Picture 1 (cartoon, rainbow, N blue to C red):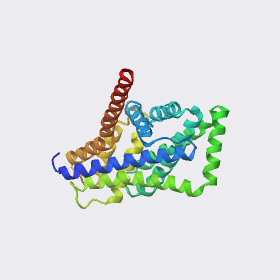
Picture 2 (spheres, rainbow, N blue to C red):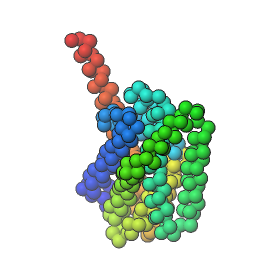
Picture 3 (tube, rainbow, N blue to C red):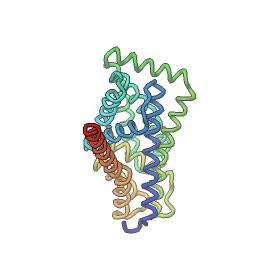
Picture 4 (cartoon, rainbow, N blue to C red):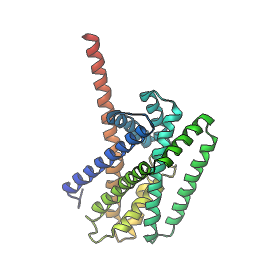
Length: 272
């Protein structure tokens, strides 16, 4: 790990686990708000499946969201349109919080092309929203009903949005802790901008999971702050491992554990 101590690695892994717990909690609360109660463990399993799909589908994680919608429909016995509405609601708050933080931080970066990245992602979000117009009428009605509930419950909407902000803010905190091991006087606002721009590039549907684009963007932007090439590359790779690949490994492990446990339970029932 070079200049990164084991204590820092453990801290970063702990913060990532907290992030995943908060994300799962948000999903459970949004599902409950839509009158679809689901246990924390079941939602964790569905999110693990979605995370695995995210790692093999390009960019904007549509494959992972489809997986979540399908699995939630099967697990909870609800219409796919209703589960899709839950997914869309979570994405609405998550993307809104992400874009707000992007607009507040990327202006501090010196790299001029970052504004084009921001505008490009904004255009992509608009296209996704317009695509909702071509959904089946029954699905559009479910989305409209969900939006009506959100308007009628502003406190709940603020809670969902605030939780999304908290989840996203943990990422630049992790990045700052890691970057400070190489450049102690690094500015946290710059680090936040670099983090969010890297994620925006990672959303571009070119490589599975944003592979390559994320690391390359982060490395290049870190160089503008005075990092050495090796230091910038190490920070980018290590940050990506903790926030992405480690999640994939843990998701695979959790899915395998659940399958083995369920298989063992079925065998015990047959033999008893």
